[in-house]
Length: 251
Ligand SMILES: C[S@@+](CC[C@H](N)C(=O)[O-])C[C@H]1O[C@@H](n2cnc3c(N)ncnc32)[C@H](O)[C@@H]1O
Image (tube, rainbow, N blue to C red; front, side, top):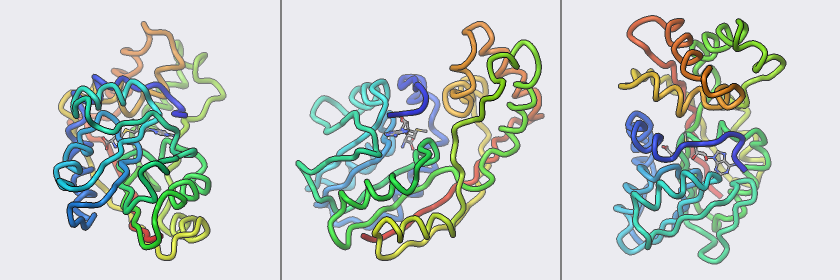
């Protein structure tokens, strides 16, 4: 399942920068309007909502490993929406599949085994179906993560982070293309794009999205001081050095 907890309500409130990036990915997905599409790691459903709007005669399945995110997505998208709590490594939408396309934004870097992930996604696509995705790629957040680790080496935080490494997986384009082909995709193209973001509310943004995996290791009263110390190390204006790995692949 997910390797960290998510607060779906907070994510929905502050994830406008993620939505902007996600909608650029959705633009790459060519749709007639009657396809069946999975949003893999749909979160609170902001990008899913735009996907649904493009499929008046189609069907969208939003899948996420976090029940809290799926609950937030149901609030946003309504009770009739097809939203499922599922681990993408065990993705199974056979009741509506095989599907025409899988869209995924800002999710794959939270999953460590990309070989298994791509095999699981490939298995749900019809021949000729497409995977259009984006996630953190090589170099993503290196500045932010260096600041967080520097703070994490100091007391009182060090005792909670000692020996722990941040569970993100930021891969490069070539190795990802190789993995996709090995997983059974017939064609794969991947590329990196730097996308710096200035979050409107840096404390909530870093707490909910970027530093969540650090914070869940420490007691509640240390979480805000950890985030504020990390932000102090970033300088002004607070800029997050996102680097996105884009994926276009055909089954
Ligand atoms: C940063 S959010 C992205 C949400 C949305 N796609 C967007 O662009 O705003 C990452 C999502 O990936 C989900 N996730 C992480 N690992 C997962 C897994 N193994 N299976 C299913 N979902 C997973 C998390 O629960 C979270 O909702």
